[in-house]
Amino acid sequence: MRILITGANGFVGQALSHKLFTQQKAGVSSLHIDSATLLDVRFDHPSPKENVKQIVGSIGDHSFLEDALKEPYDLVFHLASIPGGLAERDYDLGRAINVTATLELLELLRRQATPPVVVFASTIGVYGAPLPDFVTDDTPARPNNMSYSAQKMIGEILVDDFSRRGWIDGRSIRLPGIVARPPEPNGAISIFMSDLIRELAAGRSYTCPISAGSTVWLMSARCVADNLLHAALLPQHAVAERRTWLLPVVRTSIGELVQDIARMFGSEVLERIRYEPMDAVENVFGRQPPIDVPASRAAGFVDDGSIEMLIRNALQGAR
Image (cartoon, rainbow, N blue to C red; front, side, top):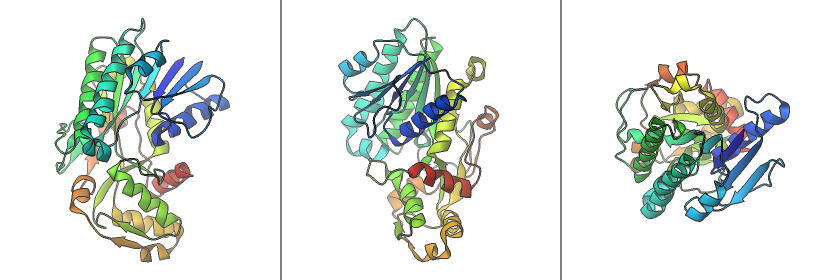
């Protein structure tokens, strides 16, 4: 099997690559990987294996993308994107990567003799704001709050349409807040959730931009990697009627999350947290309602299981 991962040096891309290649080395992988091609604008570490090729460049460069797809692929994980905050500040950049490059990638894959499986990383942002009082598998998308959300919705529609035509076998998964991202700024507004977990666990103080009573949907990078791989392995009959999945999540208030961090790392954590809510942040990321996704769970998608496991998985992935 030949695999392609766009955005492979990103937070989620590294977690997915680690899972794929660790399982392959241990001989427990569900995929037999003959070769893998990783695309990103830079790489922090050299290729882990001889059959893993890293190619540096932007998928916004058509000639770069065309050159990278000269050979066919059996499985594509399309993770590359311009995140929400940056896509909102720089509309042209967000459109170029999140929409135009996604369409060009799909058009290049369309040329293959055998349609590849394509796993597209979408976002819960497609539901817009404010969210309804309860969210399910069938809650309609309404990307009214950020260009990033609308751009990801366009990506989902393209994946569905190319799949309908038989050019690819696509699956889109809507990702919640992913923790714990590295501390470097990446343009994602939701990075504060990662900062909160990492800073408090490390014994440092943190000022949270949403209130203690705010509710969030969270998932660790390790759990995201599990779900991405699961999406890739779903048989065709499992995606006959549904190709877009809202993942199960750990839903918690920020106060509950801080209490669990304190139970794990000491009660002094409670003295090192301050709250300075910002309406613009809380309205988008701090009012996430109860969620029930039986179709997603029946298809085999999972969450971290508990707040404590979420914290442990998040910190393990951040090291």
